[in-house]
Image (cartoon, rainbow over all chains, first blue to last red; front, top):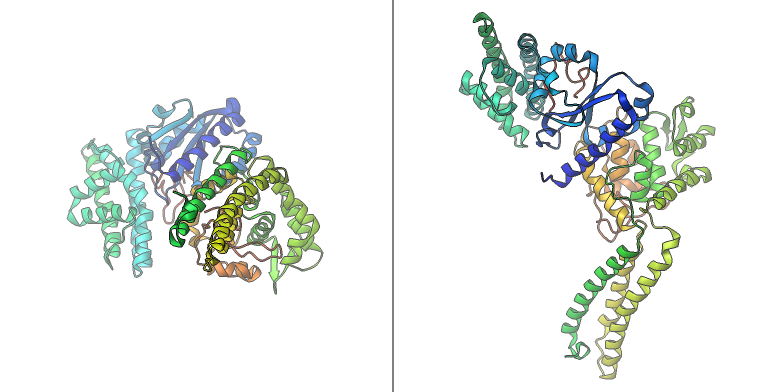
Length: 246
Length: 315
């Protein structure tokens, strides 16, 4: 696959880092899984590079030796490593079900065992955690609206920052509803469409913002509120699923 | 068709084309004779090594001073630096230790630190390491470069001189351009042949700039206070002038030369963009020539601004 020079440099850094990790950790290393936008080859300049590292045990000496390269990688490409012990994985997947459902959907195994079948949370855990996330989003977006929305540029930044969580939740909701989708952005757009035109407009504006466009004037503030309401609508959909015994 | 019989404007055009060709030939010859650097485009984990590659040993010292200021291990009062009492126990790298030791005795001016023997010695070790990696021009390749320069500059001078003698013989008086053109071409050739970095070093700096493009684009968010390693890497890869003046006025105060390029592009032209005079004045972003959460604890699971929440997947 052809990468831009920047992305090529980023992936070259990962290609150098992963063998360092596997060599240093030895048999304590289980798997390295790239997830998020980097796994889909949809890196943007502001994207983090997320890597799930599954270890058999915590090897402090080996990881100490990796602190310098990991710090450099964090500075260069915003590498965000998540260290999970193999024994912890089942409970971590259940506890952070929305995140792991997202990882299970979009990932690329960089090295080691393919542990992705173990990354799929139970339906119940996904429902509970998604509800929690949506409630959190509702509260957070309201707070962002009141505190930041008088300044359009701050409202835009708040919108962009909420995108990842909104998309992951939308994907979880659609997945629980049995609605097929191609990726998180599509899931959010489809969910918003299903909930009403004002939500669809806010979701579309969010996508445009992520592409580097700006929203006109006070529209950012409206979108913050619309997305907060959308989180509420999604919560209602989840409750309907529960009531329907799905 | 003898080009030496061509009239002034035609000959000037010929000489321009000839000069451009000679310039690229000189670069190619240099490419063949320069030591091969590592093909690995990823950074060394030492930002001071990168600063040294980009701007020389003095630049590595300046970046190190800024990093120590950022971490609070050096303090600046009236443009004098002094180190915190515990600093010597905290720093790891030899260059940092040398700077802290210099500033520990008494408040010291930046230029005195840059000129300090032990500090310079540590910075020179960085240069040696880069030379060993094939990124930095070392004295042993100088004879080859001089030979390339003599050949190319000789050709440039011979062509102009031959035309000049013919013109004088034919009684022409408007021959000033025949003096100026070879001088300009010889300067351009010197720039092409004698940079401190090897071609591999230049390619490495370009690769680093691509790799750290994100850090550069997000530089307005950086603040003093040792919050992250971004500041030292930004300074190392792009130069002190990449630091936003509004957030880092101390840097611009300590290194007044930086101010001149505060708003300038961080890439450099082939003529070089400024120089380091080894007295604490960072005059450019690139003083060498020819260069042209995923973790559940932070952003997501269990944390968060109001009720936490696993923000949901990677970005």
